[in-house]
Length: 239
Ligand code: CA
Image 1 (cartoon, helix red, strand yellow):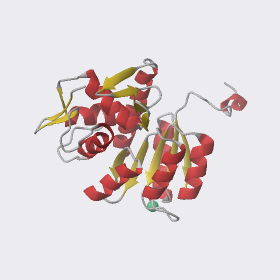
Image 2: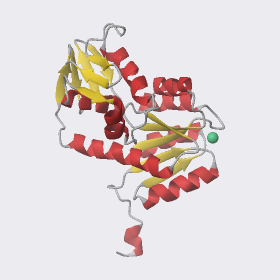
Image 3: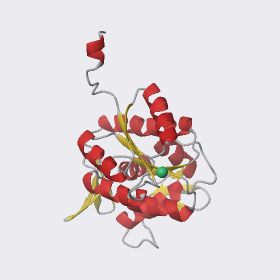
Image 4: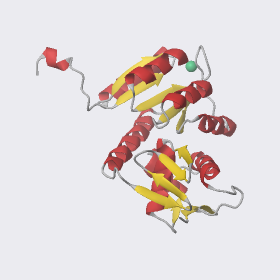
């Protein structure tokens, strides 16, 4: 292949937008992600990051919580206004559970806490793309949970005239639970299959996510009828 061809854009490469202001972290991420075969763009402020997200249409966003011009939660909310489905992984120095919940509320899908392992981050990103590829082979898939109709292609859930959007991870959690309807799916399995994470007894990611999903799905969140907790084991979907 000639040098000129090498400059052609490669549409098959997954694009990862890094919104982060620390040069060392950007350098480390760029090297590792490019080595994995991803295309990488980095922006150092929330405002620049939002513009890049709109113009470049990344397949995944890595978003620092502490940016010089804005906090990551607000940037995340603004990202979600223009792209409701792109997976957003927050890079955070904070490990407080309340911060994680706040990030999920803002529309983030996952977290890594600094200092993080790049290998672990890449495993999570690869898990996203593996599941996205799988989804590509079931483009028309719809299924019911209670009165809601979930449309996997459109990332929507519809009941009568009410429509809500589902983020990538929300949909993936529902799909995995639905594949195993009426069976208990453990937190570890959800973490591993959806987030690409090593099973961890300390992670509350799954539980926080289920709270969020119930808010969308359940008429009475305190007495859920569809996403049931199996104490000490995991969750079970009763469609
Ligand atoms: Ca920062």
